[in-house]
Image 1: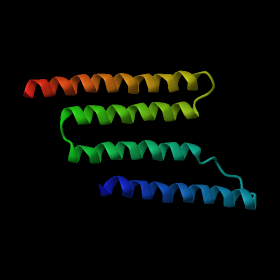
Image 2 (image 1 turned 45 degrees about the vertical axis):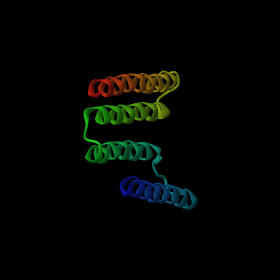
Image 3 (image 1 turned 90 degrees about the vertical axis):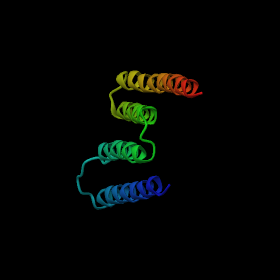
Image 4 (image 1 turned 30 degrees about the horizontal axis):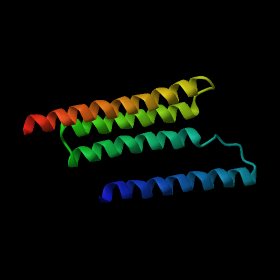
Length: 118
């Protein structure tokens, strides 16, 4: 599939630009903001873009449910990376537990759908 590879290349170029710009501004001594919040925002938007693109190829409810849930789980985990101590652990564990529960539920829904068709 070409779309995820294209998104990956665009993300790589954006992250390389952000890193080089931050490094250059550090070298010349110019005050600037940290680029990590923009980095995480770009990752979250890329997740949502992948979910939207995947709906074109897998428009069924189960695929949309699973893909959207995993995007939400990764968003919670990425928010945990920027959260203050103690909250970051709670958010990280909550995101991981959500992903595990989502996997269990989506497998149950998918196997239920398969048994109804046969």
